[in-house]
Image (cartoon, rainbow, N blue to C red; front, side, top):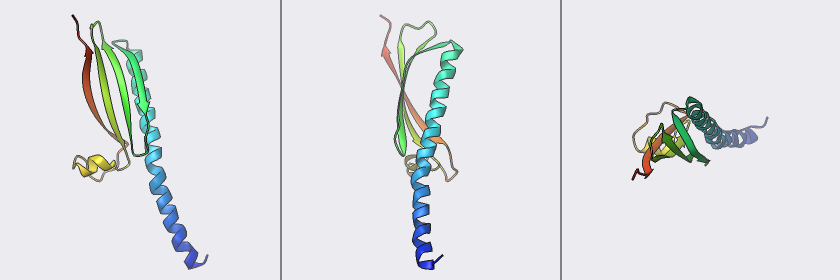
Length: 116
């Protein structure tokens, strides 16, 4: 193959891999989230009222509403999911080294309704 063609083809191939890899890791992170929610449902100690996942290219967002045991209140977990292999925001924040990971998840817990 001509060397003038090989250089641009190699660059395009590298760009393609860099662009597609976060998508692949995002799909895997979504599968892991859904499996975790399914496990919670099957255990029976927690009632999953709602589970929503909002995928993105470099990160995703998820919401999970739970009722714990016989509790009279609902808890909402708001997840910000930064998927890998090198999640940009956690790297820039200094929370992650250069070891590849599937995802880094930041979760905030909110109580939606309290007992009266």
